[in-house]
Amino acid sequence: GDSVTQMEGPVTLSEEAFLTINCTYTATGYPSLFWYVQYPGEGLQLLLKATKADDKGSNKGFEATYRKETTSFHLEKGSVQVSDSAVYFCALREIQGAQKLVFGQGTRLTINP
Amino acid sequence: DTAVSQTPKYLVTQMGNDKSIKCEQNLGHDTMYWYKQDSKKFLKIMFSYNNKELIINETVPNRFSPKSPDKAHLNLHINSLELGDSAVYFCASSQAGRNTEAFFGQGTRLTVV
Image 1 (cartoon, helix red, strand yellow):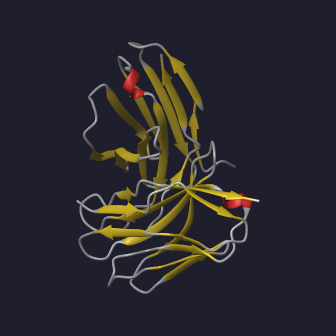
Image 2 (image 1 turned 180 degrees about the vertical axis):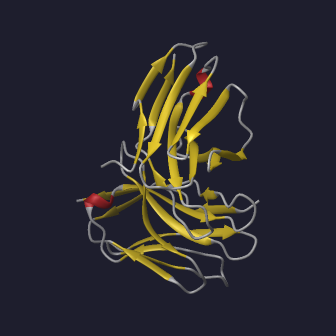
């Protein structure tokens, strides 16, 4: 089946540092790709998405570009804040069958002031 | 207005008991899901319903039984609870389709003692 692999966490950065969280996928065809964020004690919230190759999703200063050549959807932010501390999940929606959402294992990000 | 709401938020119970978690969405979506998140934050889909019809039933013990009385509700009943059932359970909803994102509830933290 389709799968998503994220970089191992936890990731710890200082405020205003540049952030990259790597995400690669294995899938049949070209699925839609998503980044979700989970703040402590809360459910998952959609951060951004891209539905076709070369699309760039962006929100709240975060960006990710759908790269079909490298089957990747890396999350980036130019200057992180303490409030960005959370767990980040990369996901894809299968294009066949029940079209379920498949998640990566999550990457915990901690930003220190 | 909460889009996807689940109750209770916390559930502590003894081994062998039977418990239910309720979920409701007011987004008009036609598809609802149950996910289980373990202590390492890994998310795994358990069930999905589309228009009250079961479309995803992953390898889950048959002690877990979902019920969807209508499109807006998806409940999860668990019989004979075991220690290993302790986790956070998330309800989610979406419109069917390969490009759609899912909206998540706040989660129910189940602790079996």
